[in-house]
Length: 348
Ligand code: ATP
Image 1 (cartoon, rainbow, N blue to C red):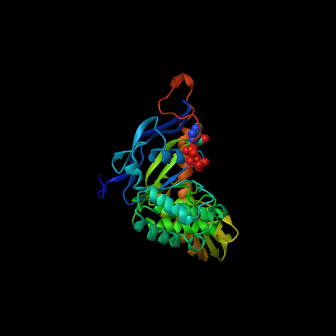
Image 2 (cartoon, helix red, strand yellow):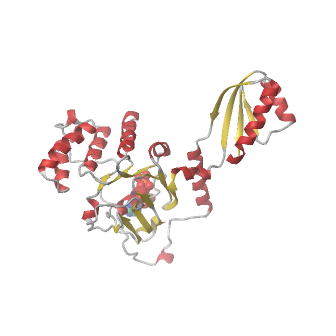
Image 3 (spheres, helix red, strand yellow):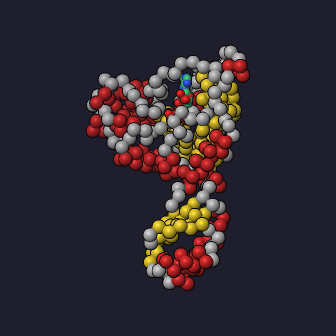
């Protein structure tokens, strides 16, 4: 078994990965996903976009209707246990046997992963400490809060010290403290592991991920480095908080309009840029008029979240192309191979 991957390897690669449920519902449509080794990859999309379906296909828990997923360069299949052993999986809202304690549960998971007792015992103690569950280690899991349950799921995903972590919505249902804890942990683990984390919360993704995949209605509409997302930025606005005679400044701006649309908000001026390449010119013109009219700059703030803008734009463009995920029976014919009609069993 090849247990190493070189620097240029994609830990995850999918080709035309497709999942159709019930012969007619496209949950994932021809996705070409690449997750480079060492990256923290955010799989983002609104509810129902296909994130969990993608993850289940990557783990070999579903058969694809078409296409394939390569993990560590090898095809993932339901029988590829050796590949799954290299992955730590955290499902959305994990649930555990209520009568188990964190110790008995982690020990059980460690045994399933084939870890010998002398490795298992010290590791589970270290993990319980790392996720802050040491004091609750003998408590029954059924008494756990959502945050504690997620932390146990995190510990379980780390028990076999995997090279790749796949965490499905790890911040779902967590309070701000739990969310911050999880985000900090992803940041820390990302130093040494490849991580794929799904979320519908762009803010979380932005904090921790260096690569991103955006799913919309089952289609992967963006896959690449996070910084490339800014290419799609539609507009941005800058707010200048000013001191001095704003009326005089506005009169000047009316008389000789600068190359930027502007609005006034009490003691602030908002500059609305349709094209980010024109920010410097617009700003320079307005700053020049400010000096001439005797106003001074107290603060400057960017108003738009570029990521959110880019995300919305991608979604709008995608919808503009008229993508529909419902296949008509006439188009598909009967019996699509690999399709699963029922909802999957519970993730945990
Ligand atoms: P969420 O953020 O709400 O968990 P998601 O992005 O993870 O959503 P999926 O759970 O992958 O999305 O679901 C994608 C679509 O496929 C949804 O509309 C869902 O209802 C449908 N779906 C998922 N699993 C099945 C199944 N086993 N049978 C039929 N439809 C399914």
